[in-house]
Length: 195
Image 1 (cartoon, rainbow, N blue to C red):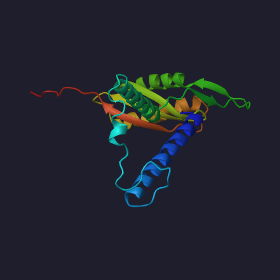
Image 2 (cartoon, helix red, strand yellow):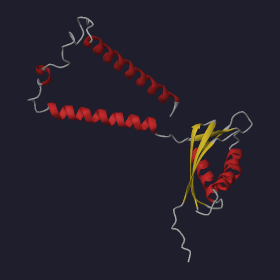
Image 3 (cartoon, rainbow, N blue to C red):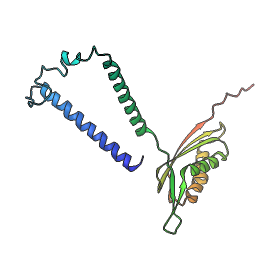
Image 4 (cartoon, rainbow, N blue to C red):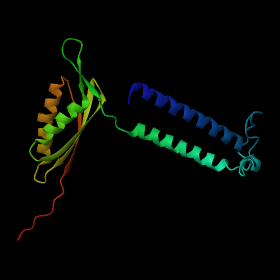
């Protein structure tokens, strides 16, 4: 998520929290007996948020319920979009490679992911590899998932991934470090029968 989107997200979340806190706190205060200002929507602890007349004012209009339902659907879809945008792990589009001339070069993140996954799949006992780069373009982080064949020692596979594939990727991109989160899973297989 870019810095601007992260700031907008935090500001909107903070504003929504402040508004809900103020509204909820004021309703609670009026409900506990505090005297509300003259312009406030509640008059006292026994006042309701919406009167019967307010709730049923447009009930007989043909457009009312479809408009209410459409508005609620839009709100739910916006909330789900916002939640998915927050929870989605963003793929790093490019990596800044130090070329030594002070300018630097940009390496496509997808290209490094493909090369790293390909080298990991060539390791003995690795059936499939998936790599996702995230973080900042000057300090990328790798998330690696390996599907291992049943006979492979997970410790050996992890050591070879670290010393070979990840080290080559780090060195080729000119990075000082390339932190990685590695998840290992074994291929399911049928038990062997002994006779």
